Image 1 (tube, rainbow, N blue to C red):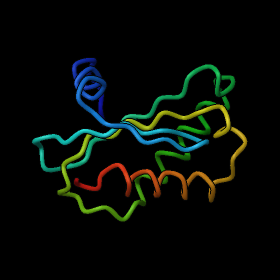
Image 2 (tube, rainbow, N blue to C red):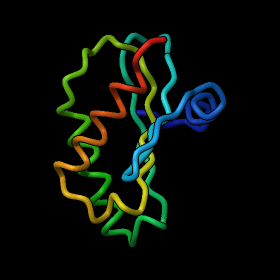
Image 3 (cartoon, rainbow, N blue to C red):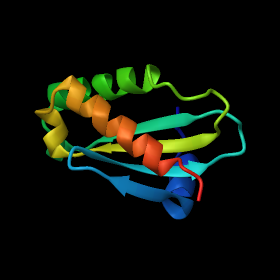
Length: 106
């Protein structure tokens, strides 16, 4: 997991982003040889219960994503207000699509 302010600042400064109506991601290569994730749910998404539910869903989607363990990306998932009313399948599709497009080299 991305935890330190330094990690988030590096991602903001040197990462690239991709967007979807439900969420957006910011990705950046790291030198660790493994993926690290951060999830952001602002107050616009909803109350604490709603934000935590969205965060749990995104964590579960990331946990089951079929990505190799040695790919080496820092990924920040920023949940948008529409993610609060989206179904699990919709969120899974959005995360999957953004991860594929965001971590494609080139």
